[in-house]
Length: 370
Ligand code: NAD
Ligand code: GLY
Image: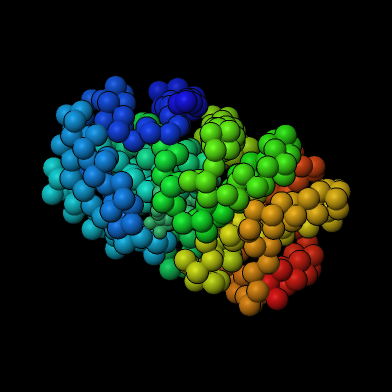
């Protein structure tokens, strides 16, 4: 069954279509919301080989002229070099202001192609077709686009909302299990920051979320689909309330990301997956919360237990505190070099923009990184 979650943002509103067997409908759905007919399809080499043809056939069938650009899979492609190659491809494809960028892939492709769309001709339409769990529940929704610099993650970027998001759950059939687990970290995040019932559902059904998609029965797939839809609904609600991360509401989505981004940076992008780094970052955040905002120790234990049950790391051994601290200073969430954290008052209730005592942070980070 297809579920539709609406992101309500006035003239920038759009729908997230979520379900099985949706990819062949992409062209028809795009034709309903966009007037342009020239498409640059941006994907990576893994996803291109698996889904590129299905998407191209769907788009051509609905009357779109399609050019395809394929970047190497992996975080390293979220860089200036690939972006500039895509500008050339956009030129070659004849993308004028009615042109459309379609991002087919995970968060790397979504962020990179989204920033291409945000900056080409000062902004053209784009469509997100997320193919990882992380991209479905997080990166494809909300309009954050951008690339990394050698000195830091996502340092160049823009808010640019997609015109449509289409998430076909069949993509999980080929998604490597490690990538599915990494996406589950962001799912846990939504429960922790905003929905204690969702958190409990995850705890009660870890066996479903740990099983390969192909081995799930109809009930398991329905449960998984409902959880993804709930995550999208939470993200939609938060983004609708604070699109450009100005009031502090949207910043709660950064739960686990302050230390998480530092772990990704200090370990060299790509070695530890984004979701894995966020998992360790969430452990740090709940430990900080137990010290600073009164989160019960039992809830700290629940989060760690859930992450372990889902096969996620709760420590990142071998990283130097000095490297982590240097990375946090550069992070976008820092103010005058002071890192800001999202802390929990209780499971399901979060606070953003929290400065924390340096010695407490160091002790917790050293413990998680040794
Ligand atoms: P990714 O895009 O690197 O994809 C992970 C791997 O899975 C890649 O090798 C890819 O080729 C492969 N893959 C993707 N779909 C597949 C499929 N269906 N079958 C087989 N293989 C498939 O990683 P990701 O975890 O999706 O995204 C991480 C990125 O997202 C990071 O750069 C992070 O900063 C960004 N992000 C952005 C936001 C945002 O709001 N914009 C939010 C969270 C994360
Ligand atoms: N992933 C954080 C955000 O979209 O704001």
